[in-house]
Length: 373
Image 1 (cartoon, rainbow, N blue to C red):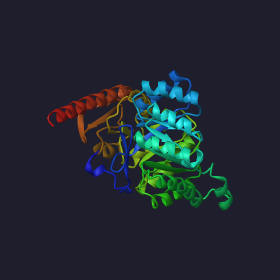
Image 2: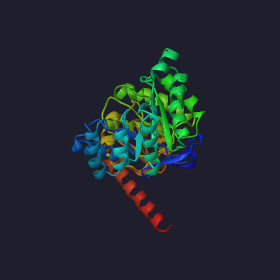
Image 3: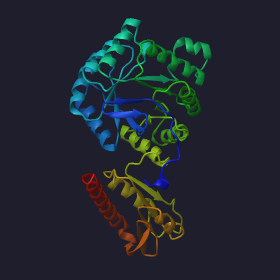
Image 4: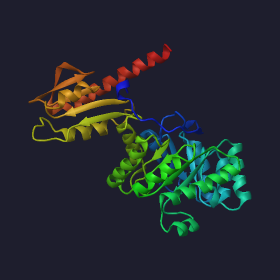
């Protein structure tokens, strides 16, 4: 990402913690998370899904651990994966102690929901001893009964009060290695709740629009809500919650960060919406290349424009680009029009070849730069 392309966003200052070896908060990159939806007791299926999420770019993966049997499965899962794992636990403090023993990289648990002071202290002391952070997860759909009665319905102030109630418990126990989410399915409720919380604490914030919906509608809601917060500098880690394959959550998460020029991973395709001027099938070309090039993680802008109206202009500011012409399309590299032109009926194969060659060259250069220090 060039200096001209760097995001103008100024991030909220937050404390730094580590989930495994992954930094969260401070000046570290905003991390992308997802959560497995397999039965945790099915170790093979869960490991397979975690590996798929890691391949898609997930920095951290959350795994639900509802029972002691699931805790035993978590132990076996942890031994077989590389990405840091957050153990998601509700109510039973004994599960938290067990998964901490088995190497959980973070505990997602609300201190006020796991019993009396002695039980809370035992979990916090264990987390402190093993240097494991805690994530407090507040949800607009599961507020404490007294807070529901006080406010009548979920409001930003209600979510803030619930969050600060749990924060106060950790403060009293002198434990500050935590991050917090105040999720809601309503975009405005979530956004305002995060704004209020961001002004109250210095710990990292985990962003999410909970229960956002299916792939299309959930992606739109998440992009709007998370985009509003991220553009204000709020947020240190995020999860896009979709009723879809968790891998799609990771892809959408990176797309949101990429669109705000916060973090880039893989190819950023710039493509026209198509019209009668297009000289080749732009939609087919983009869809095919997105599938073929999913393995590429190196950031790169590739413009695919079907005519010469906007094609040259977009290509000039892209790593690689094509501008549609009659039978053959112009090819640009590094903002320079090349003598070589692409046959419109072979444009997918030809552009893929150029992209992969460019990636190989850039990887080689990066390797040389690392070797030379």
